[in-house]
Image 1 (cartoon, chains in turn yellow, brown):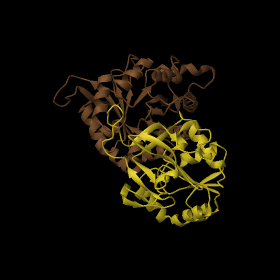
Image 2: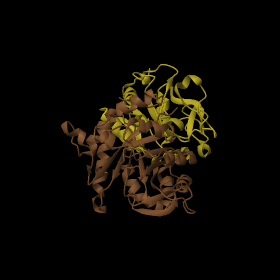
Image 3: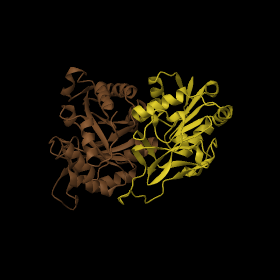
Image 4: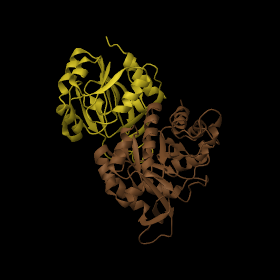
Length: 209
Length: 259
């Protein structure tokens, strides 16, 4: 069973609907015991890092997530879920879970596109990703596939090898990260059409060594 | 680099769409879920539902539509029409929509934008604006005035000022509809679109007037829009989304590939 962590960060039904659509059993839950028993974890979310960490702390979910991380349970972070698995976020000056070494940074002000026009923040809409290394999570994904992003901050893992794919919005940033049994996407793969569903399926069938 | 978004808009009354004759052979033409699925599979980047149900008692029907759409398509979609309160927003978002669009209610009570943004995040809150060209005046220096209630009531508010104010209040996006261009199929209001788009730091979806793929090119390039709303030109089968995207792509505009 796949546990979709319910920490009051919105958008959870979308993830559950996509997983169900692909034919996998899942439950949206904040029950510690149910999460402890899960074979896979999806850690979704929209909103702010500060509120997300506060909810995780209030619900007592930090320890069970760390236990799963230590036990090697496959874990997928989405959007805010791809950020709070790092050590620290500039958003609300937030200490995060520290499952992957690194920080979450804000897009700098004054970014422009190649033609010199100001870029809008949040980075919202469809964008391509550039693969930087191979991984089963990216099976079937081509260079022209696009994904749906909505964010003003982005993850910066300490270890460059943790970056599987980058995207461009004035700066190049980590769009997909992976380390051991953890994978995470800054974009909403549950809202990214066919290629997003493919990656979600890749996660649901992935057996990390 | 972000792709320009192509967004079909479906008008829904009492749970049924009000346009869409092209689908009579293979899709239930009145079913918003079937139409959403059709456009999703055709390569729409997002879908807008506009609920024109008159009676408040029948709004539950729309919520059921939203729930079924969310089980069927895996791209973002928004719902507008009759959304007045935080509770209206919550209902639609919990049913599975990414965004809610607020129009007349925000003009009457601008704080609904900030309350919505605070509760659900700016990315969920779209300001829908209906705008009419008027004689420039002290109250409306740009010559573009905000209208509400489906275009019937002029509000004495300048469209550019309202767009900027809405951004400050927490709107995450603007869907900008020109009442003058709406329904003409003769092209978007390019001047209005570029004025608003250049004035705000949030994405602008151009609406009203799309009839041919050239119109989308014009509004995405000269109108500086981030996205283009389309209705009749696809509902009545004159063009497919794939044809429109192929054309835009040939014009050098980055769009998401279909399929």
